[in-house]
Image (cartoon, rainbow, N blue to C red; front, side):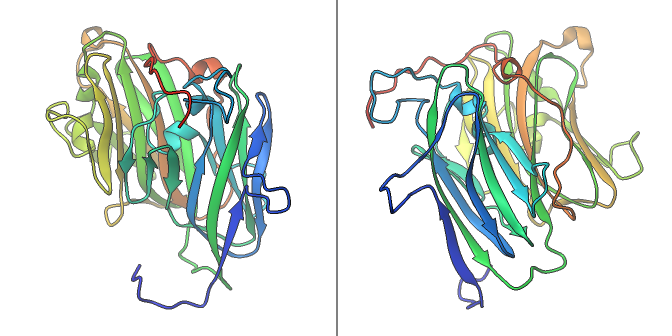
Amino acid sequence: MDISHIKHEKTCQVTTFRTDRRTKTVRIPRGESVTIGEVEGCGRVVSLWLTFPGWFWMHWDPDARISSTILKTLILRVFWDGHSRPAVCVPAGDFFGVGLCEAANFSGHYFGISSGGFYCRFPMPFRKGFRIEMENRDPHIDTEVFLNCVYQLIEQPSEEAGYFHATFRTGRDLQDRFEIADVAGRGHYAGCTLSMQGRRMNDLSFLEAPEHVYLDDNDQAPAICGTGLEDYFLGGWYFREGPFTGPLHGVPVKDPLRSCVAMYRVHTDDAIRFEKCFRFTFQHPWKRENINPFFFSSCAFFYLDTPEGQAGPEYSTEDLLSLYRIRDTDHQSLP
C-alpha cells in the first residue's frame, strides 16, 4: 500500500479497555471461551495486537501460579460475517510465530512478538462483520487478555478480496511426513509458522524433509517440491548461522541442544494459487527406520473466497502440550 494515498474509509477500534470501568482486560477463566470483540459492518481488519499474563507472571499477583503452557492453551478464534465455524482457530503462540511454549522477539512485517506484545498485520476483509473469541484450555491458569484491534469501515471490499484463514496442525512421534494444510475452495496460500522438536537431544535431522505442495485435481504428483525443510524457509545447512528474523521469513528460535526450531515464512508475490483445493506437506526422503521421531506444531495462513472456516482435526489439551520438553525459564515476577 502507498502510505501517501488518501482514502474514503472510517478508522475504528475494538479494545478491551473499558472507559466506564477503567479496566484494560477481559478475563478468560480456565475452561471457558469468551468473546473479546465483535463488529457489524463492511471493511477490513488492518491491525490486531494482544497480550496476556500467565506465561511469565500473573497480572499484579506475583504469588500466583504461572506456566508458559498458556502460550499453547490459549486459543485465538476469528469468525467472519456471522458464520459459526471460525476461519481462524490457532493457539496464540503458534499464530504469532513460536509454538514451543516460549516467546522469542522478532519483527516480521505481517506478524511478530515484540517484547511482551503479540501483533498481526495481515489484511482481513469482512462484508458483514467479525467476532474475536479466546478460549482458555489451560488446566491450571486463569488469564486476562488485552486487545487492540484496528479496522477500516468501507462501502464494499473489492470483489477480489479474499477472507483471511489460519489453520492449526500438530503431532508427536512422527517420522517420515506431516501435513500443515488441507484446504478446499478457491484462493491462495500466504505462508506459515512451523515449530519443531526432535525426541533426541542435539538432533535437527527432521529438517531434511522438503515441502510437497499438491494443487487442485492432481493429488498424486506435487506441483511444488523443495530440497529441504530449512530451504523452504530460505535458510540452509540446518540454519548454519543460527537464528535470524526478516520481514517475510525467519527463525526466531534455534536451539540445537534441545533439538528445537521455530520458523516462519510469508508469501506475497509468490503466493501459491489454487482453484479447487490445496494440500501442503513436508516429506522426509530418508528410509523410515533411519529417521528420528519428532514433534511439530504449525499455523498455515491462506485466503479463500468464502468466510466460513475449514473443518480440521480436533486436538485435546494433551495434544497441544505434547512437546518432548519445555524450556524452564526463570522469569522475573514483575515486568
